[in-house]
Length: 497
Length: 44
Image (cartoon, rainbow over the protein chains, first blue to last red):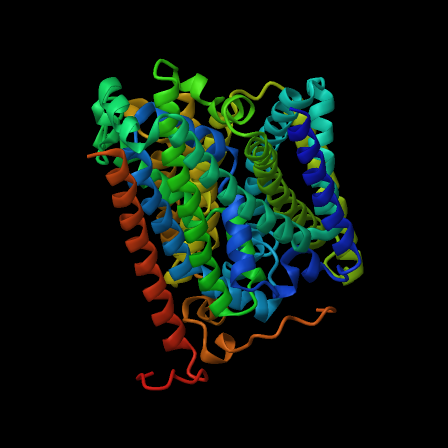
């Protein structure tokens, strides 16, 4: 246990040191928010994967595999990649080109430019982003607090404050550069820890042959790749489609498209993220099934604690330490990206646009750092409020985001007709649809994103019929595929942009 | 299916998905980046 504690402390201290190191390198808003468009493929892939593979994967998905069997992951992961691919195909290149062309920093910035509405669409998009993700940030801080609380016996308040202090500090100091480097370290440790832990746990369960025998004794359908007794094929497909919608525009990842060095880094980075996700996911399948053999009678809620339990009780202390460190790190990786995304949005899409349009870059950089602190204070404050189960809140936030942005973002990149009114109605309608469906208790077992998406599409169509079109000169650069000139423009932006 | 086969089939299925993405990305980059020289012995 002492070894595990020391390793976690060293890991947290290292992450803080990375922030201090990059503090001196940040000289502009561009370098703070999007690393001055300098990330290569592996770096971008590392940070994309680390942000997506949150504690929901590290804890929740192991639990789902243990309880529901292998079919969930077998089917759902490719649908998640389908969502990413749709984003990569129709949004990523154009967003990246916008970043190079106009110094784009945030998703609301892109929407404001596409819909020619910097003072309405852009702030509204920013508010939707901030209010939904702020709750997610609150529960993430809470989750980090729970892990540190288990490990060190700190009070909940102390644990939340210490966990938050580390990622707030490195985000505040180094921005995306420190996030990307910490994320890459995190994802490498994640892959190593989970693969080693999976091998060890399978070995500890009596080897692969014995795992098959034991699972057949418990419930043979757990090894069926198209559904189990507890989770049917139809239910999984429903979940899988909602996951695709969630990841078409996953703002805390999508925003990082701006930070790619060139199109090769952008598309290559997304591919690297897929490989890293697959490595972790296959380990999760192994861990879940081996966990079911070790604890055949556990409930789904009990399986949520499978990884901390095996880290402390079953795995060798070195592997256990690594697993506990990456459980804390998973929360840090997600929270730091939320913090930067929201901090940048508060400062760039609200403060600068509405109050200081002519602000100098130095002023904007300070405003962004203040935005990060404001979001950190508000989010950490929320983590002390009783927000509900972590997975539920995170899922609800994802549903709101998935129903708010894709229609305006994707529609605006592939079709000339979407206009300002349509963008506003689709974002607001999507968010309201999700909230209504959640309030109704998700009837028919349908995920809230489905109603949200219907209202979002309806809002856009109403806007197209009744609103004024956006001038062709504004829309054209977003509809046309990025030109070869943009595609070969590989040098990072100047510091003073 | 045995546990070992589940892992193998899953790895192959996901690997095929990633390979499909890699082929698409390569195709995209070749067609939008005319300044990039083709590899020797291959059509651009």
